[in-house]
Length: 123
Image (cartoon, rainbow, N blue to C red):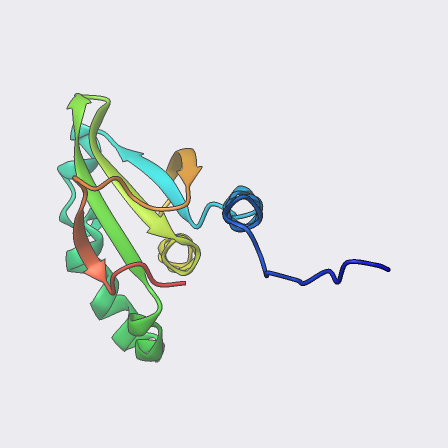
């Protein structure tokens, strides 16, 4: 006589392994762009000031809902401001003739970073 086997579903360990696998496959969505004190002397280097007019003039206003830019104060004159820009923001920034100094990438901006332009955590 055999003892019936019942499937009790996923265990907590199964769920944990699934979460770890899912998070390890997450691709960085934000590029870290550094700006120097010299960069800040030109008002056009502030995305919050220059990006929307550019998008309006170029007929790309629909992109306003896809752009996400966060900022954080840097700690040196060479890195006075850090911008965390999603892919769409980087693309528009380059179209605007800017040459972003990308120093890294990450999935999300740091918790201390403030939304500077666009929508929160846009794809």
